[in-house]
Image (tube, rainbow, N blue to C red; front, side, top):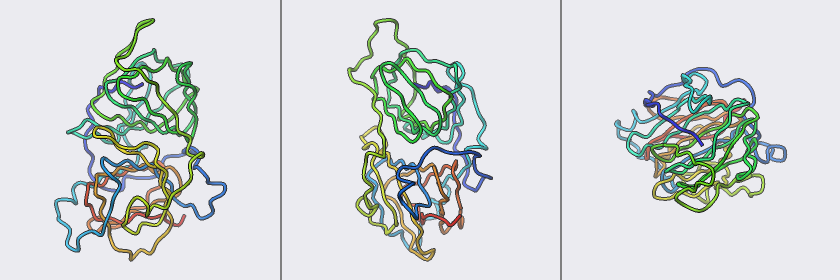
Length: 284
């Protein structure tokens, strides 16, 4: 769907300011789940496993943490009128995470990409006669080398996940993409919450929904609901590099290098594999 040509720098760690204004899309089961305080979109480039962090963690991990407020990231215009705020790009694999605004009136022709494209819809809708409509609080995925579109937008905002170096190949009338198949939409409200302990063993309190399993080339994507836990809980380290985007509530992220971050909706974070941290919901 997107065509990205800008170079994205790796930003330094640190709390970068106030949260994004406005709503950030619905939180699945929010109306019936009392005590839900933080919901995040979580991406992992391997199995979502975790364990106790070493008591003396290596200092070279400290520089790998990224924490930023998407509202303060410079915006660039792409693909004939879409606006992108690049949050992170993996310099080795080309994977990227961005926040995108798609104005009303901008349309995209039918096309395909060499890599998998995913998004979490925050606000507004996008629609296509072949791909259906994607609305707030839903996850959408187009497999690599599969045709999609054409698309129109009612004015939308979404978290965009590109799973490699991104190119757009437009199709003429009647043209075909290299692979057969179709994009698909996942509505998390149709999925049950599972205890987070089912997929990791670090003692993090919460629940999880698997939106898309990972492959050798693509990240696994989860919706994670975190509850409060004791601030004295031991630090844990994930077995893979993880990224998160706060959708609702307040996330408390603490580590032995930088102290405590309290992240509101609109904040992005990245933790390298093995980075010692505590993740939980924070009181508002």
